[in-house]
Image: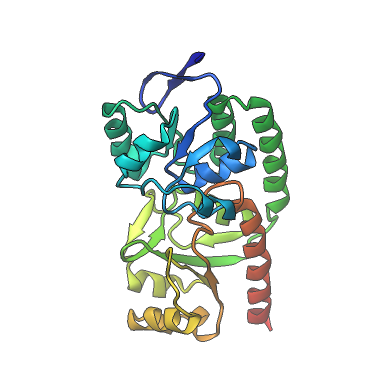
Length: 280
């Protein structure tokens, strides 16, 4: 098998990988989405339990999560390349390497431009550079079309990640809101995820819209989600009282694959509709 060496800024070293890997395992939902977009789906041997985009991901063997790997199944799949992200998965990189697997990390993006550049990075890694350039150009055009010339309103975003969690200013979600004309109420905080955000601060900011993203496998109705917010005192928000709440399905904004830009377009139009109702 022919191999090449690619330098990883994350690991600070050269990684020897197959010139065109044929048995790829992805342990991150966004990477799985990118592999499908790059038309490399027939080369995907396994995915993580959280990989639900594209829908065809459900047909692939599930070999682990962000924190745990089923090594017995992974060995049976005989991957020639395992793709992971950074952040929560950094420890998995070293664990997989110690067990003799070839691992290449794709960084967690902090903005939408980095999301697009990750497509190109992945294209280099799996030998699909020309397809990656084509897709990156298309996504760049989509990003340009998404840009709002003026501010639509302010937004409070929440997702359950083992507890109420919002986002600070150093996240791709904050940048995504900025692109479509929404201002994250925590945008000035130079941090990433905010666990158990301060209720009094949220009430003070009184956001125009509340976006609540369900966690995976959460069947809760809109009414139940509103009840949760009310239990924490957020029922006092005008956005909650007046119904300016958007309930997002799992893997909408928490997912940073190519499909995110399509979801952002829908969020932008829905936000405009909700705020038009406010003006009336």
